[in-house]
Length: 369
Image 1: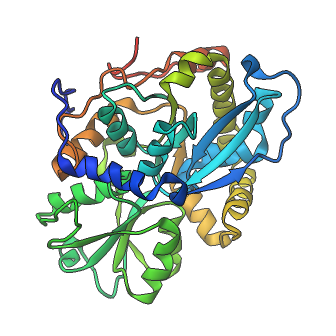
Image 2: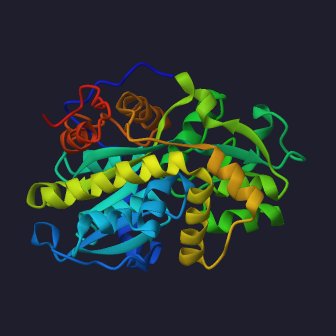
């Protein structure tokens, strides 16, 4: 892994990053998102902070298990009382950032790369990372009949979920480390990088239109079930096998204006994570119900088991690894001089953790205080 990247003072953006975010805006985040309605648990009692509704974004991925289980089982709604939850599901991070910037959501779960990109582009004004959620759960799965080693990636077509999303950055960085040249914007080069919606990747892989994909769970497990082989488990590329894959973010406006709602959601997050880790079988069933509600399809038991076991659920945002993921984006050619100063505000989370008798988490020198 590269040495930690110091926050840049000039924060210059390469054209590709702007194009990536403009692409999300051009097609509209609504075209990449699904209104998931309200959770099954009904809002009752007093409204938290007098707020009528909080709008929450997430991905239908097992790397977003905190959101899936917390929304499905009502952990968040119970903390909010009479404040209603409106849920919106996204395919990948750039679209969710566009929704946050446009005021369509207040809080969300998201990968590190879109959070860094969005924060940098707004000159540090649009969001804060307020909690961790998950580590791991990402693999490069390939067709073993076509690819038997990293060298075999040359000339092949490998998918990622979206230009500039966390898996796209990781894939481009890995290919560069293997000596392959790929134009980050077009995806053309020694290896063709094709950006494809997560839900479309398995069928394209089975048809032979894709030779592999760098994807989160459960898509990775679905590819393995379809005959794929894990060529790279991303956690093996990281010291101690941990790296942030999902964070909880809030718009700075919402964080400032409605601290009580944010604290309630953080209590729900901590309680959800504890419940997932204490009740894995029940958690898997809850995840499957939520994924079915979002997509209309259940996961095969073997796929669900493999995907769930590949993800570590935690409260710690693993802030030190965020610096390294920013370095990946720079090296891949997606970002230059990323802004990381004050990207975290973990004060509310640490307050919740202390109240629960749990240890505080570290901001790695990137906190708002």
